Image (cartoon, rainbow, N blue to C red; front, top):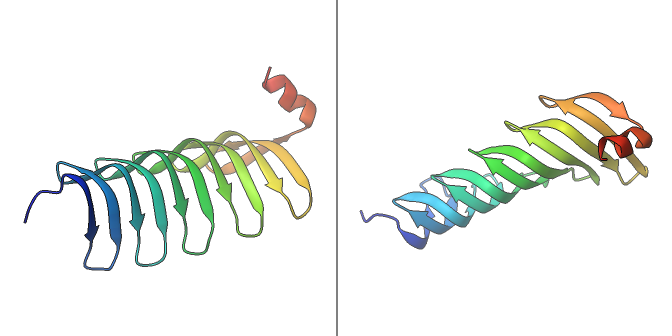
Length: 134
């Protein structure tokens, strides 16, 4: 079997596919990975890990647009639920962590908060957010 290098497409035995860049037999660079169960990732890779900017779409339509580090959400990203809600904010090791904004378009709500390890620990009012951003 030849080494994967440059641009190409590969299909695994389970039906999942990757089309994009390869380096030294590893997914590396920009590419699109489609899992058999319906999940999709469009974005940057490094040594088989999602790394850099990417868009991950879950099988149920939920979507994350943002930064990755070693296959986990890391840095700034936006998480979209299928009912129109979204979280815009910071992530660490795959979980909401730091300042973020929760938006519920169906109710016209915008809330600013602080998250730690995936759990919201505090809501802020708009005045507090203005002070934090100065």
